[in-house]
Length: 230
Length: 230
Image (cartoon, rainbow over all chains, first blue to last red; front, side, top):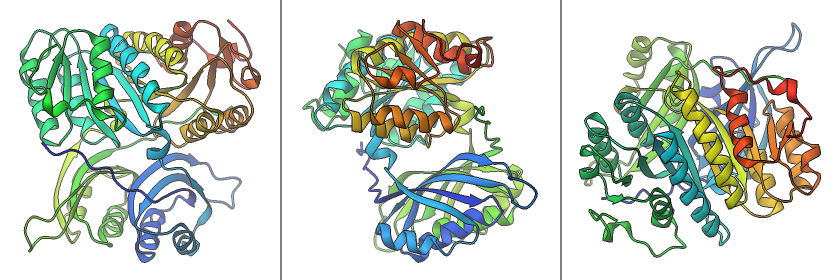
């Protein structure tokens, strides 16, 4: 299974633009002309017009690869409707890799307890690991969340925390693993435990192992534990 | 203080493109021509060339506002180097609003316990609330994280969980609140408790109140509690 490569993001910018139909296309053009590739764009908020003379605006957070700060800022200066731009820190540097925990509230909370405590220990030594959770019920909702993890920025590992999961959740788990994101499941009823990398009975230990598996500061190698149950 | 408006995202797509300099600009153009606005773009992964004849590729997750699915898909069909596209669910529908918890590991874990348990109860009634955490130490790191919350997609409320915070963290807290994101802090040493919306001594209750404050299914109004200590 391929390990997910880190996307090398070189410059993070906060920009404010007139919110016209050509705003983002013009921005993307200017980035391309500077030799960069737009890797991330998030709309932070829309700005209402101030009085009758101004148009609506939009605040964006962007991350661009393959270009120096100065060249990018100069190139963006030519974008029509640019109101402001400033350098920020890329989300990767601030929030780092993400462990995602999905499932029932009581168990998600216990996995989070283990994962946050372990992330704390690694972050003290220079790592950046976030623990992100959502409490959900129902096969359809959980399967959709599992599939969506493939598209979450910086997601590196999923923990499934529940008492029974299978059916479409197991299909979604196989798809996610094919995308290179490993899964740890609690020991539970249903077919899910046959479709994950590791099964762990204690939720606190599951959270701890999840963080160890993605920390560069740990020696835990998930590929050597694959298929085991603890 | 303005409440953060939900961005109305109409269509979410997963697209695979040749990873050339014009890939994203062409994509943004096609979206604009269909009448849409590109609101979110995440790079899921880069694809290595398969053999000598193909070029590198890139997988993107995009969210587009103001256009119907059919019109968007037809317009993207004309983008040079488009390898695949499929509809997905927007992150907003899957993971919903986010409570962000930042601070020391032991306390972040207890806030998460309260927040995840409370989110579970609201998500059962149709809400979508995620609880996302990062354990950090040091004024500089925490202040950077507080500022970055303004740029996190779907972030609605921040909980600061620690034993002493002030200085630049207090400045960052004032900036974040000016952006319309409220803050709950644990009762702690330092100036931070004078620069937040609400101070709560018990971390489990702080997490619970954080979720109640952003849940449409709750009746807790943070603006009526502002400045209070529990």
